[in-house]
Length: 76
Image (cartoon, rainbow, N blue to C red; front, top):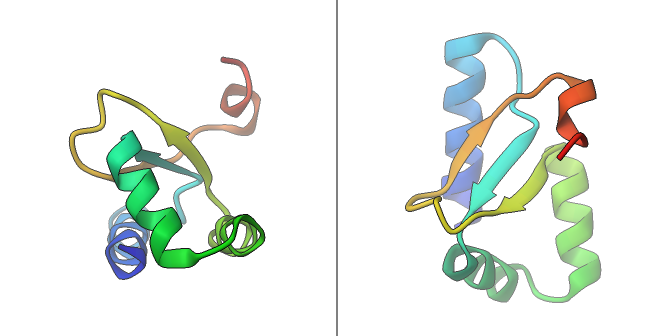
């Protein structure tokens, strides 16, 4: 899962010229990623290193990434 997320982010950067700052997952993807990463401290460190906020969404059929301006990232 981590390699898939990294590939999504790398492709996004290649296409847009900047790294995404949001990762959308559904609950099943999120649980799979947590199991792969391990404890919550490792998960927090990983999301910090990826520089992406993780959003759990029932609408996310597949993991995807996006970029939002800073002022819109925490408005919702």
